[in-house]
Image 1 (tube, one colour):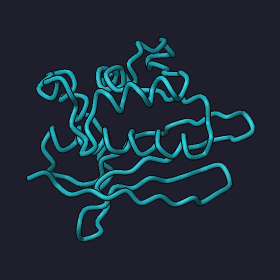
Image 2 (cartoon, rainbow, N blue to C red):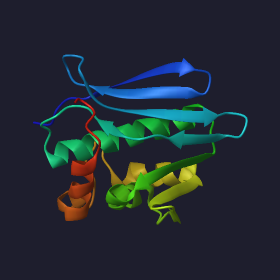
Image 3 (cartoon, rainbow, N blue to C red):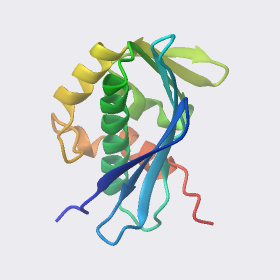
Image 4 (spheres, rainbow, N blue to C red):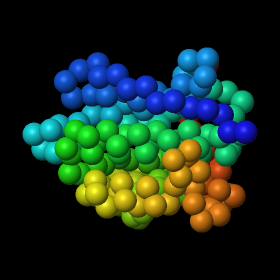
Length: 155
């Protein structure tokens, strides 16, 4: 049975939101900090962090997918029109799969920048509400490797 994860959003400042995924006991499993500007209608997704050690690759992917889905939901709620993020080389396969775009080279990383409606539609149609990737892609070696490379900051 998949780990039950519940999103928790705080807004520590006028242009930032922190999204945390908590398991049943309330422990944080994964989080991301987002920055946004309603004036420019743009939101930026920060580094996706898996904070709980010992998760399988599939559980890590699930947590990352749920963070992205929740961030896009929040961006829509805020009335943003554009979203952007960067991905390090090892996370590019997962970022491409989620964003539905190739991204652009940006100094050893890839920059993903697109209209919110297009990215959110893609994510909602290629993932499930409980964080699974649709289309049988969960076993993709590159995506599982990206999940293993997700930063674990519990040190």
